[in-house]
Length: 164
Image (cartoon, rainbow, N blue to C red; front, side, top):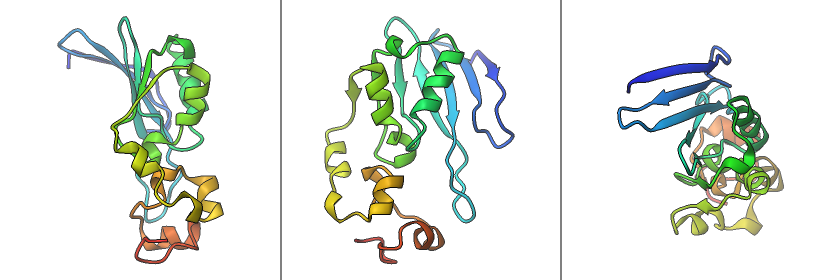
């Protein structure tokens, strides 16, 4: 990397940081750190979402459920507006990477790029998911492996093996 610029210093744990990365190729990336609200046995730190800048800027990942608005706020802080995005790219189907998608898709109108398998991941047993899990997590995470203490407190209808 040629240069890292801190646009906004967030919290000491990494949440809410905004950085600009200038790559040797001349490409510029914005790094936007959104919160994961887990704690105790499962504290992953922030999810880093990236905007690849250029003639057709696009977002890589959308943070966890409820972080769409936070990402939009962080984008505005860098001078980007929702309509500036020409695409949203999801790297994989985990709720800390795709949870903010509904709000971002609605606010930006940008096309969404995902692997074809993503459709299968998000539709696995949607009618059997516990109501509390549906409210708190995107469909892609209903089958995530989580510490038992986390699933006991957040997903009471999921068995210890992780199946519904």
